[in-house]
Length: 165
Image 1 (tube, rainbow, N blue to C red):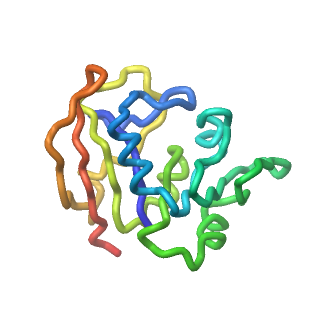
Image 2 (cartoon, rainbow, N blue to C red):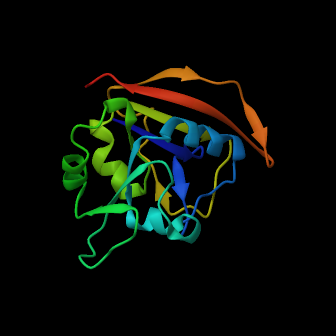
């Protein structure tokens, strides 16, 4: 299982349910990595998508505590553990954790890889954070891209591997 996220210098990932940065190249990478796979996400992350619709060409497993929640094109589960049960049998490389903050926190220890877009800036308005992989035991940088600059923001693709699995 993998996770994929955009994080600023302070590992911030969101504000009031939205993304902190608009990075078209990162979005293309996200799409190419997750297409035809299974994504696990929280309801608030789903609601942040255009029209609140699930991602196309992906199996969308949505975690929510709202027992009455239903969304066309989504499999609804009540916990991270239930999401993993629903995803049982999915190829490890095709299973993606895509947010939000509490979903990342719950499932990161079970991820083999983390594909992190690290932005060379701080978002002072952030209210949601990703665990700092540089300080978590067992997480090591596997690859770092050359810097990319777009929309006035510079970032790198940093791939981490969990050596504790």
